[in-house]
Length: 232
Ligand SMILES: CC(C)(COP(=O)(O)OP(=O)(O)OC[C@H]1O[C@@H](n2cnc3c(N)ncnc32)[C@H](O)[C@@H]1OP(=O)(O)O)[C@@H](O)C(=O)NCCC(=O)NCCS
Image (cartoon, rainbow, N blue to C red; front, top):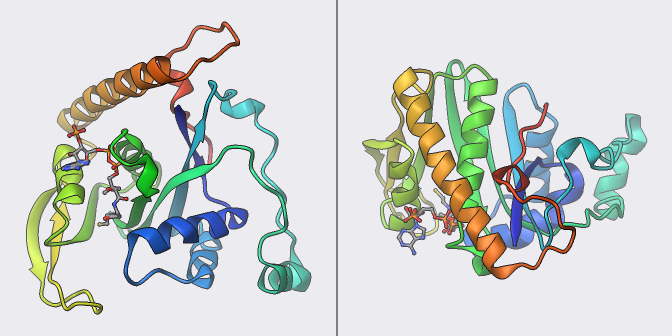
Protein backbone atom coordinates (compact mmCIF):
# COMPACT_ATOMS: atom_id res chain seq x y z
CA UNK A 1 0.00 0.00 0.00
CA UNK A 2 1.22 3.52 -0.81
CA UNK A 3 0.45 6.35 1.61
CA UNK A 4 0.39 10.05 0.98
CA UNK A 5 -0.60 13.28 2.70
CA UNK A 6 -3.12 15.90 1.63
CA UNK A 7 -4.75 18.88 3.31
CA UNK A 8 -7.99 17.97 5.08
CA UNK A 9 -11.13 19.43 3.48
CA UNK A 10 -14.66 19.58 4.86
CA UNK A 11 -15.69 16.64 2.67
CA UNK A 12 -13.26 14.48 4.71
CA UNK A 13 -14.99 15.04 8.04
CA UNK A 14 -17.28 11.99 7.84
CA UNK A 15 -14.31 9.63 7.38
CA UNK A 16 -12.27 11.52 9.97
CA UNK A 17 -15.10 11.01 12.46
CA UNK A 18 -15.06 7.24 11.92
CA UNK A 19 -11.37 7.08 12.82
CA UNK A 20 -11.89 9.58 15.64
CA UNK A 21 -14.58 7.40 17.24
CA UNK A 22 -12.32 4.35 17.00
CA UNK A 23 -9.39 6.25 18.52
CA UNK A 24 -10.58 8.61 21.25
CA UNK A 25 -13.08 8.26 24.12
CA UNK A 26 -14.29 11.88 23.71
CA UNK A 27 -14.35 12.52 19.93
CA UNK A 28 -14.52 16.04 18.52
CA UNK A 29 -17.79 16.91 16.82
CA UNK A 30 -18.01 17.56 13.06
CA UNK A 31 -18.65 21.23 13.86
CA UNK A 32 -15.39 21.48 15.76
CA UNK A 33 -13.56 20.19 12.67
CA UNK A 34 -15.45 22.61 10.43
CA UNK A 35 -14.48 25.52 12.67
CA UNK A 36 -10.85 24.42 12.58
CA UNK A 37 -10.81 24.08 8.79
CA UNK A 38 -12.32 27.54 8.37
CA UNK A 39 -9.46 29.13 10.28
CA UNK A 40 -6.41 28.25 8.15
CA UNK A 41 -4.27 31.13 9.46
CA UNK A 42 -4.16 29.57 12.92
CA UNK A 43 -4.70 25.88 12.23
CA UNK A 44 -3.65 23.22 9.74
CA UNK A 45 -5.22 19.80 9.30
CA UNK A 46 -3.93 17.01 7.10
CA UNK A 47 -5.08 13.53 6.12
CA UNK A 48 -3.20 10.39 5.08
CA UNK A 49 -4.63 8.40 2.20
CA UNK A 50 -3.86 4.90 0.95
CA UNK A 51 -3.45 3.72 -2.60
CA UNK A 52 -2.73 0.26 -3.98
CA UNK A 53 -0.72 1.79 -6.84
CA UNK A 54 1.66 4.76 -6.77
CA UNK A 55 -0.65 7.77 -6.62
CA UNK A 56 -0.20 10.54 -9.20
CA UNK A 57 1.99 13.51 -8.28
CA UNK A 58 0.14 16.14 -6.32
CA UNK A 59 -0.18 18.54 -9.25
CA UNK A 60 -2.02 15.87 -11.24
CA UNK A 61 -4.78 15.51 -8.68
CA UNK A 62 -8.15 16.86 -9.64
CA UNK A 63 -8.57 20.29 -8.07
CA UNK A 64 -9.99 20.13 -4.56
CA UNK A 65 -13.78 20.37 -4.53
CA UNK A 66 -14.77 24.03 -4.46
CA UNK A 67 -16.42 25.08 -1.26
CA UNK A 68 -19.67 26.93 -1.64
CA UNK A 69 -19.57 30.46 -0.36
CA UNK A 70 -22.20 32.62 1.32
CA UNK A 71 -25.25 31.49 3.27
CA UNK A 72 -25.80 28.40 1.11
CA UNK A 73 -22.22 27.34 1.73
CA UNK A 74 -22.76 27.57 5.46
CA UNK A 75 -26.12 25.78 5.44
CA UNK A 76 -25.61 22.91 3.02
CA UNK A 77 -23.00 20.97 5.00
CA UNK A 78 -25.16 21.23 8.12
CA UNK A 79 -28.24 20.03 6.26
CA UNK A 80 -26.73 17.32 4.09
CA UNK A 81 -23.33 16.47 5.55
CA UNK A 82 -20.64 16.47 2.89
CA UNK A 83 -21.41 17.50 -0.67
CA UNK A 84 -21.16 14.00 -2.08
CA UNK A 85 -17.69 14.44 -3.58
CA UNK A 86 -15.72 11.33 -2.63
CA UNK A 87 -11.96 11.19 -2.91
CA UNK A 88 -10.95 7.96 -4.66
CA UNK A 89 -8.24 7.21 -2.09
CA UNK A 90 -9.45 5.99 1.33
CA UNK A 91 -8.61 8.18 4.29
CA UNK A 92 -6.53 6.20 6.80
CA UNK A 93 -5.38 8.85 9.27
CA UNK A 94 -5.34 12.52 10.08
CA UNK A 95 -3.70 15.12 12.28
CA UNK A 96 -3.83 18.79 13.06
CA UNK A 97 -2.16 21.66 14.80
CA UNK A 98 -2.76 25.19 16.05
CA UNK A 99 -0.29 27.99 15.91
CA UNK A 100 0.04 30.12 19.04
CA UNK A 101 2.66 32.86 18.62
CA UNK A 102 5.75 30.85 17.67
CA UNK A 103 4.60 27.54 19.04
CA UNK A 104 2.66 24.91 17.09
CA UNK A 105 0.42 22.79 19.27
CA UNK A 106 -0.48 19.36 17.89
CA UNK A 107 -4.19 19.02 18.66
CA UNK A 108 -4.83 15.57 17.27
CA UNK A 109 -3.28 12.67 15.38
CA UNK A 110 -4.84 9.28 14.71
CA UNK A 111 -4.57 6.34 12.34
CA UNK A 112 -7.39 3.91 11.53
CA UNK A 113 -6.83 0.79 13.71
CA UNK A 114 -6.33 -1.54 10.73
CA UNK A 115 -3.57 0.70 9.29
CA UNK A 116 -1.53 1.17 12.48
CA UNK A 117 2.06 -0.01 12.80
CA UNK A 118 2.92 0.68 9.14
CA UNK A 119 4.47 4.14 9.39
CA UNK A 120 1.31 6.16 8.73
CA UNK A 121 1.43 7.87 12.15
CA UNK A 122 5.02 8.83 11.46
CA UNK A 123 4.14 10.10 7.99
CA UNK A 124 1.42 12.27 9.54
CA UNK A 125 3.77 13.59 12.21
CA UNK A 126 6.37 14.59 9.59
CA UNK A 127 3.51 16.26 7.66
CA UNK A 128 2.55 18.24 10.76
CA UNK A 129 6.16 19.25 11.40
CA UNK A 130 6.30 20.49 7.77
CA UNK A 131 3.17 22.54 8.40
CA UNK A 132 4.63 23.98 11.61
CA UNK A 133 7.77 25.01 9.70
CA UNK A 134 5.62 26.52 6.96
CA UNK A 135 3.73 28.57 9.59
CA UNK A 136 7.07 29.86 10.94
CA UNK A 137 6.69 28.04 14.27
CA UNK A 138 9.90 27.52 16.19
CA UNK A 139 8.79 24.61 18.34
CA UNK A 140 6.08 22.00 18.73
CA UNK A 141 4.16 20.97 21.80
CA UNK A 142 1.32 18.56 22.66
CA UNK A 143 -0.48 16.73 25.43
CA UNK A 144 -0.67 12.94 25.57
CA UNK A 145 -2.22 10.55 28.08
CA UNK A 146 0.37 9.28 30.55
CA UNK A 147 -0.79 5.73 29.66
CA UNK A 148 -0.38 6.22 25.89
CA UNK A 149 3.09 4.77 25.50
CA UNK A 150 2.66 4.10 21.76
CA UNK A 151 2.08 7.78 20.95
CA UNK A 152 4.78 8.88 23.40
CA UNK A 153 7.26 6.59 21.68
CA UNK A 154 6.41 8.17 18.31
CA UNK A 155 6.88 11.69 19.75
CA UNK A 156 10.17 10.79 21.46
CA UNK A 157 11.48 9.52 18.12
CA UNK A 158 10.88 13.00 16.64
CA UNK A 159 12.61 14.90 19.45
CA UNK A 160 9.71 15.61 21.79
CA UNK A 161 10.61 15.43 25.48
CA UNK A 162 8.35 15.37 28.56
CA UNK A 163 8.30 18.88 30.08
CA UNK A 164 5.44 18.67 32.57
CA UNK A 165 2.06 17.23 33.48
CA UNK A 166 -1.51 18.48 33.55
CA UNK A 167 -3.18 16.62 36.42
CA UNK A 168 -6.59 15.03 35.65
CA UNK A 169 -6.60 16.67 32.20
CA UNK A 170 -8.81 14.04 30.50
CA UNK A 171 -12.44 14.34 31.55
CA UNK A 172 -13.50 10.78 30.65
CA UNK A 173 -11.30 9.05 33.26
CA UNK A 174 -9.46 11.83 35.08
CA UNK A 175 -6.11 10.71 33.62
CA UNK A 176 -3.12 13.07 33.72
CA UNK A 177 -1.70 14.53 30.51
CA UNK A 178 1.99 14.48 29.85
CA UNK A 179 3.13 17.69 28.15
CA UNK A 180 5.79 17.02 25.52
CA UNK A 181 7.71 19.67 23.55
CA UNK A 182 10.52 19.85 21.04
CA UNK A 183 13.51 22.15 21.15
CA UNK A 184 13.69 24.55 18.21
CA UNK A 185 12.71 22.80 14.99
CA UNK A 186 14.65 25.40 13.00
CA UNK A 187 18.17 24.48 14.10
CA UNK A 188 20.45 22.71 11.60
CA UNK A 189 20.69 19.82 14.10
CA UNK A 190 16.95 19.26 14.18
CA UNK A 191 16.65 19.66 10.41
CA UNK A 192 19.34 17.02 9.95
CA UNK A 193 17.64 14.66 12.42
CA UNK A 194 14.35 15.21 10.61
CA UNK A 195 15.74 14.48 7.17
CA UNK A 196 17.40 11.32 8.44
CA UNK A 197 14.16 10.12 10.05
CA UNK A 198 12.26 11.00 6.90
CA UNK A 199 14.75 9.10 4.73
CA UNK A 200 14.37 5.99 6.90
CA UNK A 201 10.59 6.34 6.95
CA UNK A 202 10.35 6.64 3.17
CA UNK A 203 12.64 3.64 2.72
CA UNK A 204 10.36 1.65 5.04
CA UNK A 205 7.19 2.81 3.29
CA UNK A 206 8.69 2.06 -0.11
CA UNK A 207 9.78 -1.44 0.80
CA UNK A 208 6.41 -2.18 2.42
CA UNK A 209 4.63 -0.95 -0.70
CA UNK A 210 6.86 -2.92 -3.05
CA UNK A 211 6.65 -6.05 -0.91
CA UNK A 212 2.87 -6.08 -0.68
CA UNK A 213 1.49 -4.16 -3.58
CA UNK A 214 1.75 -5.03 -7.24
CA UNK A 215 1.83 -1.70 -9.05
CA UNK A 216 1.46 -2.42 -12.74
CA UNK A 217 2.26 0.89 -14.36
CA UNK A 218 5.94 0.08 -14.78
CA UNK A 219 7.10 3.49 -13.52
CA UNK A 220 10.09 3.74 -11.22
CA UNK A 221 8.89 3.68 -7.64
CA UNK A 222 10.68 6.14 -5.44
CA UNK A 223 10.01 7.65 -2.04
CA UNK A 224 8.23 10.53 -3.73
CA UNK A 225 5.29 8.22 -4.31
CA UNK A 226 4.74 7.91 -0.61
CA UNK A 227 4.69 11.56 0.33
CA UNK A 228 4.22 14.86 -1.39
CA UNK A 229 4.80 18.36 -0.29
CA UNK A 230 1.98 20.66 -1.23
CA UNK A 231 1.31 24.35 -1.30
CA UNK A 232 -1.20 25.43 1.29
C1 LIG B 1 -0.27 6.92 17.96
C2 LIG B 1 -0.59 6.51 16.52
C3 LIG B 1 -1.02 7.74 15.74
C4 LIG B 1 0.68 5.90 15.89
O1 LIG B 1 0.39 5.62 14.52
P1 LIG B 1 0.99 4.33 13.78
O2 LIG B 1 0.71 4.49 12.35
O3 LIG B 1 0.49 3.09 14.43
O4 LIG B 1 2.55 4.47 14.11
P2 LIG B 1 3.77 4.13 13.13
O5 LIG B 1 3.57 2.80 12.52
O6 LIG B 1 4.01 5.29 12.25
O7 LIG B 1 4.95 4.00 14.19
C5 LIG B 1 5.73 5.13 14.53
C6 LIG B 1 6.32 4.98 15.90
O8 LIG B 1 5.26 4.90 16.88
C7 LIG B 1 5.67 4.00 17.92
N1 LIG B 1 4.83 2.81 17.89
C8 LIG B 1 3.95 2.42 16.93
N2 LIG B 1 3.33 1.29 17.30
C9 LIG B 1 3.84 0.95 18.50
C10 LIG B 1 3.60 -0.13 19.40
N3 LIG B 1 2.70 -1.07 19.14
N4 LIG B 1 4.28 -0.16 20.57
C11 LIG B 1 5.18 0.80 20.88
N5 LIG B 1 5.47 1.86 20.05
C12 LIG B 1 4.81 1.91 18.89
C13 LIG B 1 7.11 3.63 17.62
O9 LIG B 1 7.95 4.63 18.18
C14 LIG B 1 7.12 3.72 16.11
O10 LIG B 1 8.42 3.90 15.59
P3 LIG B 1 9.27 2.57 15.18
O11 LIG B 1 8.49 1.94 14.06
O12 LIG B 1 10.59 3.11 14.77
O13 LIG B 1 9.30 1.71 16.41
C15 LIG B 1 -1.69 5.40 16.48
O14 LIG B 1 -1.32 4.35 17.34
C16 LIG B 1 -3.08 5.89 16.88
O15 LIG B 1 -3.85 6.36 16.06
N6 LIG B 1 -3.44 5.76 18.18
C17 LIG B 1 -4.77 6.17 18.66
C18 LIG B 1 -4.89 7.67 18.73
C19 LIG B 1 -3.84 8.27 19.62
O16 LIG B 1 -3.52 7.77 20.68
N7 LIG B 1 -3.30 9.43 19.18
C20 LIG B 1 -2.32 10.18 19.92
C21 LIG B 1 -2.98 11.18 20.77
S1 LIG B 1 -1.82 12.15 21.71
